[in-house]
Amino acid sequence: MARDLEEYLRPEVKSTPFCPGCGHGTLMNLILRAIDELKVSMDEMLFVSGIGCAAWIPSPNFNADTLHTLHGRAIAFATGAKMFNPKLKVMVISGDGDLTSIGGNHLIHAARRNIDLTVICANNMIYGMTGGQVASTSPLGAISSTTMEGNIYRPFDLCKLVLGAGAPYVARYSVTQPLSLVGAIKKSLTTHGFTFIEVLSPCHTQFGRRNRYDSPSDMLKMLMENCVSKEQAEHLSKEELKDKIITGEFSDGGA
Ligand SMILES: Cc1ncc(C[n+]2csc(CCOP(=O)(O)OP(=O)(O)O)c2C)c(N)n1
Ligand code: SF4
Image 1 (cartoon, protein in one colour):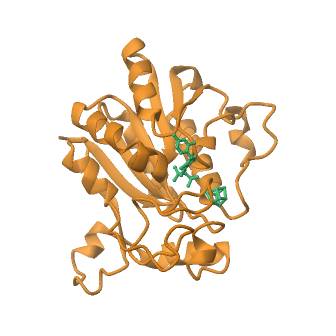
Image 2: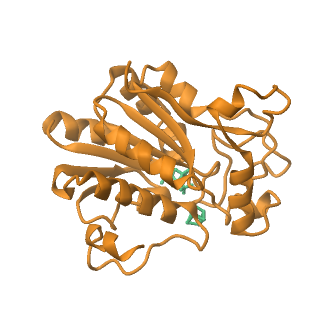
Image 3: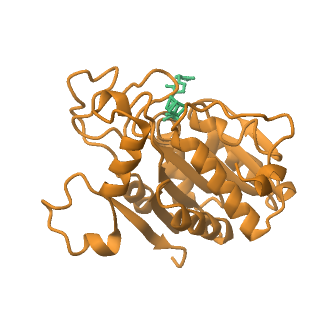
């Protein structure tokens, strides 16, 4: 963590709980960078997370009010807090398992109701904390502790899911695209209504080592090679788009 961001951390925090090479540490840094650039006071903010490794990004680390809630229920708690105090800027930060599997119903209905929340989903394509079980976001064929011969189900396209439910701002970036990601977080914080950012955040410990990415840097390289912008994707064939991850803003807040 850069020195200038230390003021955003609770003084008693000396290290994060993440494995070496985990993308969640990078995401934590980029969220704070966006807040710093916007000059939003931490006193105006509430951070809400569910359960999982990603849920440890804000809590207990951020020097702000943080609510570490139940598995899958971060958006429900965040909605309640926002109803009670509409002046709060409420940011939900949690994993793909938490927000889109057990919590998937809350996600689509908060988007449909256009609740004024910023939701950041750290997607590592697996349940990291509990030992690498398959998630609703695991790619077809992915090896996990519960799909030892490969996942037979298609993953959700989270951005399409939330867009379909009516969210006015939806974006997807990888932690390997830090400038675009900081820009998207800033935009989500300044857009009224339900805003959603899917962040590809590598988990080498549970996903990478089972899926032929032998080191954390192999996972980062895979993301750098496979992420294409939505503008680039328009010029690629269906065959060329196989295994590619399309990144960018899918709805820009104007809806
Ligand atoms: C009601 C309930 N069911 C299951 C669990 C076990 N559990 C804890 S975290 C987790 C998955 C977390 O995955 P994700 O949200 O993707 O976060 P990651 O650890 O990958 O960052 C599960 C299934 C739980 N804590 N509570
Ligand atoms: S298990 Fe995966 S998601 Fe959890 S801290 Fe380790 S690398 Fe990160």
